[in-house]
Length: 393
Image (cartoon, rainbow, N blue to C red; front, side, top):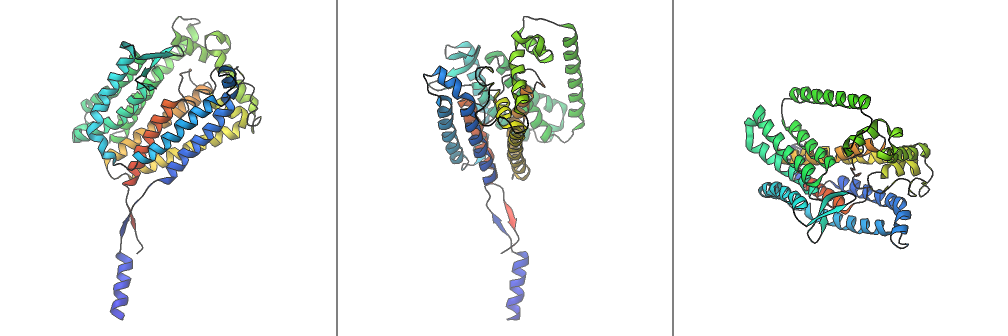
């Protein structure tokens, strides 16, 4: 009996088993954000939908709800697959995204809307620039891993930056989408930063770039008053919105009025005045201003906290991923969502020029929600490969 007790005690101390893991917290955070977005989308878009679609005030809500539900179900299914299956197709995805963006500009399949030619109609209408984001996220880690120790060299870093820049420039030139180009470039830089052991070089170059941009913007603000280039007009509208109401400052000013009138707790859900045609297409990139008007600073902070929790779950998965590929892919997803949230909110509160960047999971847009959910599916697939050691029997 004494020997049996000793054996049992030793088994309790040394016994370890590997536990499967699935990040339900990430899935719950995404579903919560989507549900919050649908509520705010209906509140924001019902008036405009009623005017445009013969009294159907639920037009935008219904389309977004159906696409969101399908995207979530598809993401859950795809998350059961092994994310390593992306490695052999990553190069094809990278080249394919370039081909799709070129088709927007050079073939009749390209579709123009809202003054820009950014969509492609292949039976289903979508933005190829969204494919480019995922292509960069899944392809750059493959190149980094293949480089091995050579990745530490400046030449290797420049090659990787070139791969990211190629997609970013293609998004700008072939789909006339500067904001998406900036996000693709930002994703590439942040992924390389995460993988590279030497951070001093990145900090130095980043500081120089920030200084140059700051000097250029300050010079433009002091010397320029008008311009025929619409991007220059956007910068001038950002610097002097009151003086450039016809050049883009109007939307920014109305957004600030909406946020200011909401106070701390807001006017109440559905009681926004600025959504009644004052802010054009408020359900798209300006929806955060309506959140603040109806739910106040409290609602805006609550939404930001939901995004922070989502990003925390992605950080957790990246930190505990079983291999470098999983870590870098989830880091790229983290970078994409973080950049898009930061840039959208900065535009709404006039900390940067208007760019047309939507708020993930909240703004209206079927292409955006579908591709974002595919990224979440990849992150969930990585989480399934995480193994924790259980100290108990």
